[in-house]
Image 1 (cartoon, one colour):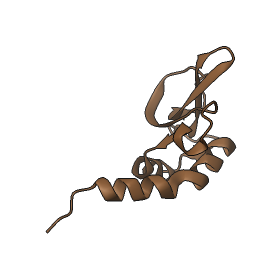
Image 2 (image 1 turned 180 degrees about the vertical axis):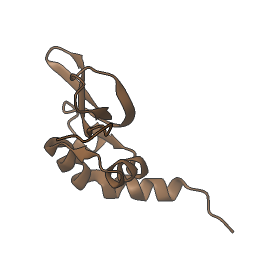
Image 3 (image 1 turned 90 degrees about the vertical axis):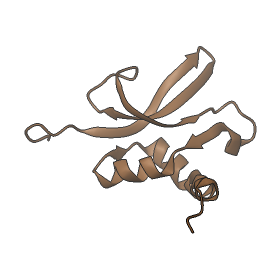
Image 4 (image 1 turned 90 degrees about the horizontal axis):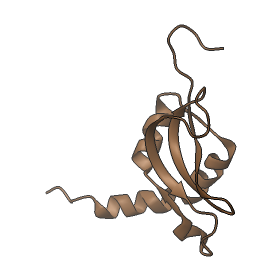
Length: 101
């Protein structure tokens, strides 16, 4: 159970798109919010209709790690996506960061 003013924060998918053409945003949201409720932060997207699976997923790895470190619980489906694709997005992020001299 929740204690005091603590908020039960979850990392989960928010359904978007239209009927028969689903699209999901990976978001940080209060667990008491409905599926289409108010989002705290967007962490990526997932499009199951893209034939190449890697192109259908986008993630922001440093923000995902931050939210996990402060106690956000990750849904089962999002955990699968994170485990599968996080290394790719970490390497892309490291390549895009400016080199310090």
